Image (cartoon, rainbow, N blue to C red; front, side, top):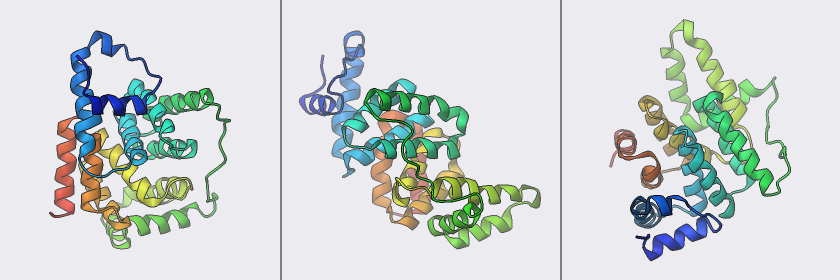
Length: 251
């Protein structure tokens, strides 16, 4: 048994040097998965290959799928995703998943880049200082999420948890979103993919559906992106994400 010709073509383009042991041990599964992930799903929507691979990489970090991440990272670099874009994707995951879930993926990324002849460290992408990160972070947080939403969150946050509002501004947004290498639209697609794949983040998923709309990623775009995650995260989390899209971005 083997994937259909279109699935095989896509697979060969993404993984030109990959010899899969699963094709020998589990040919039926490979046929089912490749026909779905590398043909049927790709025929839905119009997501360019670089964006598709970047959001899938984010989802794989959230799923803690190290083996698949390494394989898809190779595909992303082959497809033209730059080392800076990959590193920024991994760095941003720290804000949403924590270093405990990201550190191994940073190690994989560094190893793959070195194997491909990329000199590390890469050029710095930070645009803030310890003195202005809070101010710049709050500004970009309001730009992406909306000033009214940020003000409501601050008003509704209990006083003994107000430090979290400060840290969202200066750390999450000031340290990460202000970096160069990825624009706001891509960062929001990555954030949404991280949260959707992680699971248990329903309120945050809805919040970042809204943020995506705010930066110009419309309902159709979000449906396309979540659709491309389906083979890697499964149906329950995909359907939960679609419900969040329906709740926030009405059909």
